[in-house]
Length: 405
Image 1 (cartoon, rainbow, N blue to C red):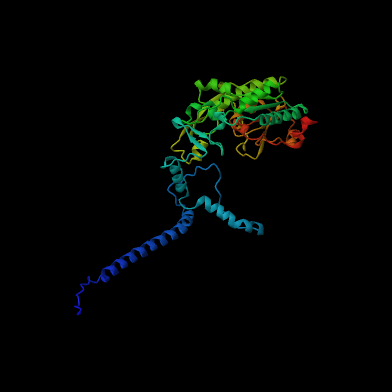
Image 2: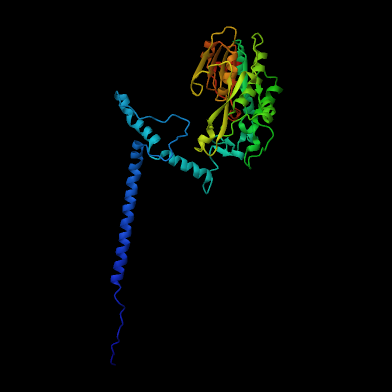
């Protein structure tokens, strides 16, 4: 059988078209690689050059600390060992566009598609900001969550009573002052979802226990006086964790009345508001607004109560690790040692003038050597309400085991 060859129609050669497309893709790929390479090099060198040239769209830093300075040339081998680390610290604080990038992160956290709900700052109503400590995602100090167990409550009672007994053995009266958290006084400015779930807080539990057991510890509850003063004055900063001078003055009034009762042999005359001049502070930048790096979006109106008769508040009260001593050498006034946190800073020009010598100790455990050295007529422990949600501080064994002797 004969086979008839069939004609095969071949398509036109696509090679020229394919070669052109491949060439185009290669060119695009090369261009992208070059752009990526340049971007990588820029990412390496722009921050370094920016630190040298001080490039930044935002020149202000809102950090509540001193930025690292350029290190000096090492003078010895020990300095040389730390030289590179100091340069790294300097670079971290001054690389190009650092403040701009920090602000961009802050804007993203607050105004981004998914807001940061796990940060340390809660944005409340009417421009109010609230502090949420690490691990306290529900403001447990206000909401009544996590009440004292019986063992925890007993631990706090024993802690205070042992201090009181040790100080009493040396003839030193002991006064405990616990300023309330901001949300305890201004819960109406919290955002939805932070409603109080349990009527009794740990502070309520501690006060009730001390009363029930007829404890000798003098503990001042400042909440009634502050709540009573709310209708007539703003008592806490809107964008800061602390009370303002008006709030501090309300607290001072309660404290000094108790001090009069505890030190009857001293002639203590309380100050009044007429002894002070209200002076505006501009600009007022709250620590919470600074923590968010957004003080321009959360401004505050600040003021100070300045004594008409000047009183030199000692420098260094901002230092959390220092003991600051002020001495007027006036034998007609008692001596005071106060263990305190930052809430005492506003109290200093109010309480200080009543005492000849004041030792401001900024830590929570008592130092027997300091107390023996100062021989105060009164010792005050001031610490914020939220500290009750931590274990009590561990005093030295001399105090810790005193009640057992």
